[in-house]
Image (cartoon, rainbow over all chains, first blue to last red; front, side):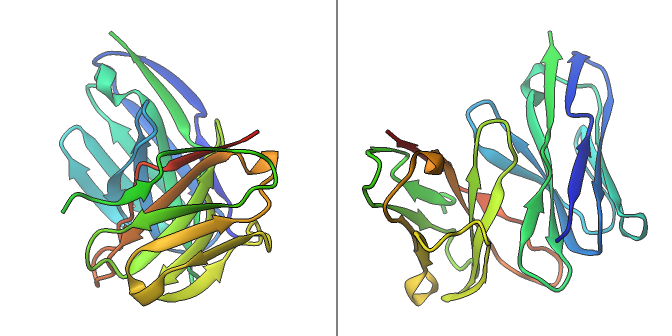
Length: 109
Length: 115
């Protein structure tokens, strides 16, 4: 089955800094999503982005499906951005969504 | 619409007992997913329903696990003869498929502890 790898595994930022999180996937996918899991465990969807670029406030994401990767950009980070960021890919031709291991982000005030 | 709800939020049980969890998806969402998440890991796919049909089931889901989605509305996940290794957060998500999006919305999860 498809493999999803995220980097870096851990990231510590000073408030106001920018960062880029990466997600690599091993095979063709039908869709690609980014989620934020807050410290209380709730998963919040950030982007549905099988290809192209999207922006939502300080966050933006780009997926290059032909090269099998996606990037999540966080600009002007805030302490409330802390948590775990997951990417999740739906296998092409299937119904199984595979999550990466996540990037754990801590933003210091 | 209040989003995806799950019940109970916490469950403590003794090894060998059966447990059942419920998920109520967002109204009119035709897709429903169950995942399991252990500490420090990403969610692991368990099973997928399109309306009432169970179309995909992970090999992680042993014969002690069963899921249903009668009438394509709420779903239940049952674990029989629980083992300590079943302790985890069980997450439910739903989505509505259109030509442009298939975003999954997650519930708060049910945390299972098997003693």
